[in-house]
Structures are given as structure tokens and as C-alpha cells.
Image 1: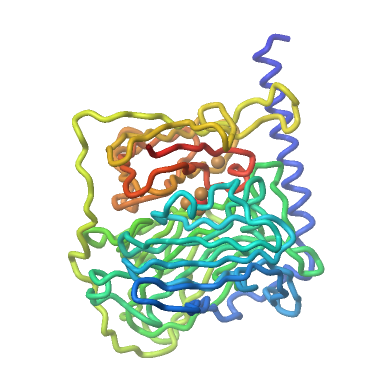
Image 2: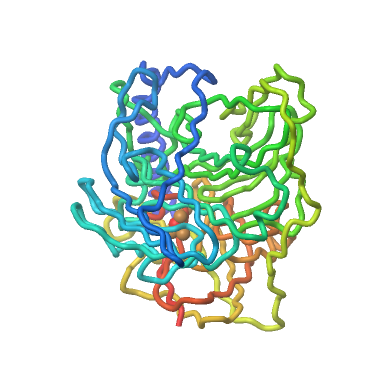
Amino acid sequence: MNRRNALGLMAIGGATALATTRFAVLRRAEGNPATRVPRFELALKIPAVLKPTKRTETQDEYDIVQSEAEQEILPGHATKIWGYQGVFPGPTIRVRRGRTAVIRHTNRLSAHTVVHLHGGRTPSDSDGFATDMVMPGETRIYKYPNQQRASTLWYHDHAMDRTGENVYRGLAGFYIIEDDEELSLPLPKGDFDVPLLLQDRMFAADGSLLYSTFGHEGIQGNVMLVNGVPWPRMEVSTRTYRFRILNGSNARPFRLALSNGTPFTLIGTDGGLLTQPAAVQSLPLAMAERADVIVDFSRIPVGTKLFLLDTREGPGRQELLRFDVTNRGRDDATIPSRLSDPGLLSRPATANTRTWTLQRTFNLSHGMPPFLWTINGRQFDPDRSDAKVPLGEIELWRFRNEGGFSRLPHPPHVHLAHFQILERNGGPPLPHERGWKDTVGLERGEEVLVMIRFEQFRGRYMLHCHNLEHEDHAMMSRFDVL
Ligand code: C2O
Ligand code: CU
Ligand code: CU
């Protein structure tokens, strides 16, 4: 048998092994009483906004304890979660642009943790490099300057080798930056500005969270949660709402739509508001991507029920959240036709170009697991720098998903800087990709060309696939801004 055939057989064997693991784990999770949740009966919850413990002229200080707690996620069951302040999802942190946030995290869990502000422009020592670990009992202070546009960010765990499990158990929350420009717009505010964290989970019969990497392919659960509530309902009035949607799943991509066929009005992406709103009928959202949308219920009769759907899985489309139009509302919001000046870059005539290929490579040395998740053929090594990038210079980066057997996308994510997508598969970017991004969904065989410029901070940072099980095993690269 020649080498190619041998590799082919190994790959088929590997794929079969993975399918078996996935099936076995899902079988444990399905059909157990814990999972029989009444759909669209539980009310959507909105994570509480964390209060600073101290405010000075220029900064807000917060204290967060990472701890284990019991939470009723499935009715009648107490589930052990790991939470920032002992809650899942973590409290929302809302800050003003230009005011530094100083966050003191204490780890009262039984495993090491790292905190990362996803989408944050943060100095290297506060960015949550995977090996900057906070051991059980330890405290670490993270400083976020918040010198960046108003945007919907999130904070989540990033610990070396166990990010997937830490996030799965609950270590994730919203981090929203506000600024004067955005606050001056007549967009929906207060109770009508609603963060929606989409996640999937699996539960055992006793209500505990079941975690498995699905043979490193990435966990996909059979219970859909929005803000930690399984298949919730939300009562809305006949007016416009702003939804900040975050795909906080470890490995589940979505394609969102509204069941009444109306489009979302997209107003912002990972890095804040767009220049102008865009109507988007079908909204793909890979892991860690955010979409800031307006939904207009004003012409919908009271008594109507409609759904936020995930249509990615095809005809057996899945309802995630039900909107019950229950009240007449007075709408004080409008959507301006010009939202913001995102300060987009123009493409330079020449620029340094780098290619990052996300791929599955055969594990020839040990054989188990049969393959590895790599970037440019290599696994993450915290001591190896894969790129030295000059501060302040525009570079062109090409991300490629080299395919393989996985039906899941690889969404590359870059720390420190947002990027602009120039091309997707040689054509224009998708409608929801025309603003600043920090994460981009790449299906098998796809590639994007982006323009990126690192500013403000030098030091070591990471880029990686935001399938968290891929990231842990170890589809991640270190780069250094010099
Ligand atoms: Cu959202 Cu490096 O992560
Ligand atoms: Cu990040
Ligand atoms: Cu991946």
C-alpha cells in the first residue's frame, strides 16, 4: 500500500471514529428527562450589568470572582456552572469609550483560567495570552483602555488547552463599549437594546452539563440557549428593538432568519456601527461573530408570535427564540440612513501579504488522534512567533480553510486589531461583512483576503480558529507586533 492510500485509510478511520464519538455522546444527552424542556415557555433573561466597585476621574474598577455555582437552567434541575460572579452567562460590562476599565479577576475554580476581551484593543499583558494563567486561588488585574469605537465585545476564558471546557461551563459575558457618537443616534436604547447570546449545550440525566470535544471536532449540543435560557420567549411591543447577537457557541455556526420572512436591518458588526444600515434576509453567524441588528415589530399585530430561526441545518430549521408581540408600543427610535464613519482604510498599492491556512494535518508521529488542527501546518507553540508585524502598517492577510472532512467552518479570529474584508473567494465580501470584523466564517475550501493594521500596542498576541475545540488542539498562532 502506498503512502497516499495509507493516509486515505487513516483519514477514513479517523472520520469514522469521530462520527462514533459524536453519536455516542449525543445519545447520552438525548432522550434523558433533563433535556425535555418545554419550548418557548421560559422567559428570556437579560444578564445584569456589573457595577463598578470604584470610579475615579478616568477609570472604572470592577471585581469579578470566578466561581462554581448551581443554577436552574433546565426547569427542576440544578446545574453546576462556572461563572463570572457565579452566574452564567456572566454579567454584562458596559463601559464608556476613553474610560479605562480595571478588572480584578479572582479564580475560585478548580482549574486554571485566563480572561480575554474579544475584540478589545488591549495591551499584551492584559490580552489573555493562553499561558498567562490565573491558577486556582490567584488574582489577576486586567486593564482595558477602551480607546476604540462603540462596539459589542465579549469577555471569555482563554486558558491554554481548556478554553473550550471553561467557556462551555459558563465563562463568557458581554462587554459593551459606548461612545458619544453612538449615543447621539436615535437608535433603540435601554430596555430596547437587548444582547442575545446564542449557545448550545448538552445535559446528562441529572441535569449536569455534559462536555465532550467530539473527538476534537468541536462540541455541538442539543439544547439551544439564549442568554442561558433554553428556547426562551420574549415579550415585545409594537416598536423597533436593537439586538446585539453573539454566537457564543463553542463549535456551532448559525444562519439566522426571522420566521415572518422580514429581513434584519444590520447596523453593526464585530467592530461597531456600519456606515449605513443594510437589509439582510439571512444572516450567517460563525462562532464569536457578532451582528448588531434592528428588528421592527411596529407593523405586527398584537398577539402575533414569531421566531428567531437557525436555518443552517436546512429544512429541519430550528427555532431558537420566540418573540410574542404582546403590547402596543410607542416608538421613540428611528434608524438613521447614515450611522457612523467607521474610519475604513483604503487599500495601499503595495503591502506585505501573509497567508494563514487553517487545515487538518495527519498526525504521523503518534497516530492518535489521527489528525491535528493546524495553521500553516503547525500547532500552537507559545514560545514560537509565527509572524513579526510592524506596528502601524497595513498588511494584507489571506485566511484559507483548506477543507478536509469537517463539515464545520473554521472561523479565524485575530486579537488586537479589527480587519476589513476585501475579498471573499475572489468576489466581494458578504453583506454582513462590510464593516470592521475580528472573526470571519470560512466554510470548507473558502478564503478571504483582509486588510489589517495593528496600532497602539506592541507585544505578543494570538490568532486562532474560534471553534474552541480546534483552538485547544491547537489551531492557534502567536504573532508579535514590533
Ligand atoms: Cu474570542 Cu482569542 O478569542
Ligand atoms: Cu479575541
Ligand atoms: Cu477550526
